[in-house]
Image 1: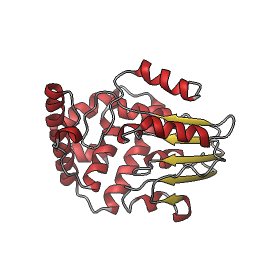
Image 2: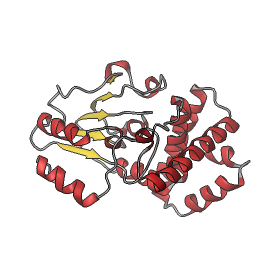
Image 3: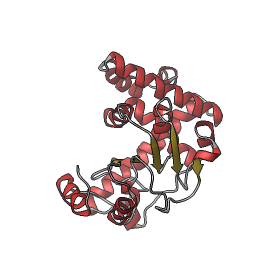
Image 4: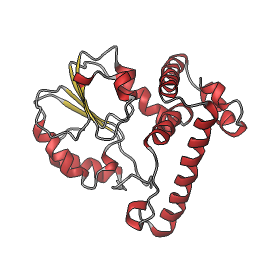
Length: 240
């Protein structure tokens, strides 16, 4: 689907071709799965190709403006009262499409597909459900939480596996906990990590990602140093 979407936009098509041609055989298989996910999402939301491109560039242009302001002020948008309203569907389209054409976003998805031994799994901040979709053949018993997911999530997850609310740290039997692209959306991410750590059973694991100097409209915390981040989570009790 991605090649059809981009065929009328030379800029994105060129970027996409350079990236796709650099992928290995196994990476292309993952890429194909993400492409299939975008197709499912677009069909569910009745999104024509030209609208997907339009929404993606709108999202990028807003982000570029936020980056310019960040360079001047060193403040994220929410601290400058310049937060733009972005609809959930345009936002999710931008996130999915970015996994198909930007190396860093694709790499996150690729690393997730490598994870094994998923006996009882928790997803905090399930988003579109892409991570769950990529792992669906490995998942035996799982639960997912996200207060902001659109109705499309139910195409990926059954209602018994998904709670459209904030996670309250009450479940203590998970072997693996995912918090992908989640921490930067919290005002107090280290408080979250402390609570998660206390709720985790022995020999369980937390798999998380976060961003540094990415002034996206909905990012509330900037992890400016990866070294400092690791020091703080080790102090909480985690082993990296």
